[in-house]
Length: 304
Image (tube, rainbow, N blue to C red):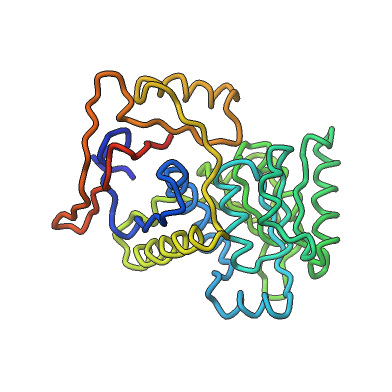
């Protein structure tokens, strides 16, 4: 992030604390959908929203006694929303009230309806007020204490969705003075029309690429968790489509994402398939700063 090292190339360089082992059961294409989006959602849930991580005593206790810690995730079909659902479920955070569409049905295996988890299809509600009411009712049915949700993550991050989400979790602070809180991925904190009772913050994945030792530890720990989740099946990559003609197909792919032709999928490209490019076989290497060079570069896709 924000360095001289490019991504649309046959070789990629990344800090060791943001890399992780890809199990044999995971293709390079699937793995390419994970890093930035999954790390973004890990930062959103466990740093900005301060939810308990899966290995914490609070998360373990919640799994045993069924403690309710409702979470609203807006944008189930986005890559960040997809990964947020899987990470929240791994941390025994329930009920997970996620807003998506019919394209979000693929995430149902990661939700537990018996614990109140639900996907709400926003297209089924003609007005904002009706959608807000539906989300609030889902929180109540999920058994949330006092029928309220205090934490939300907006992965769409339009001004409209930020306003909507604040209205969903709006309300007075608790007895300790803590206010409802939502995070977004658009660097937005001051959107006109948001409910003033809610703290609006934003999440930056760049935190795991910083030189801060605690952020490095966060990256290493979650990288190991991603790898284990892939092996065990509770974590998977995001759906994807592979473009044609390598780097020459980038423009077409990015325009398809912009126009909505590609939805609920990551766009990938294989640099080695660029007309005129020569594929080479790379070897894993480490430089003096501890940065890792990728292996088998001819097989690696680049991720949009």
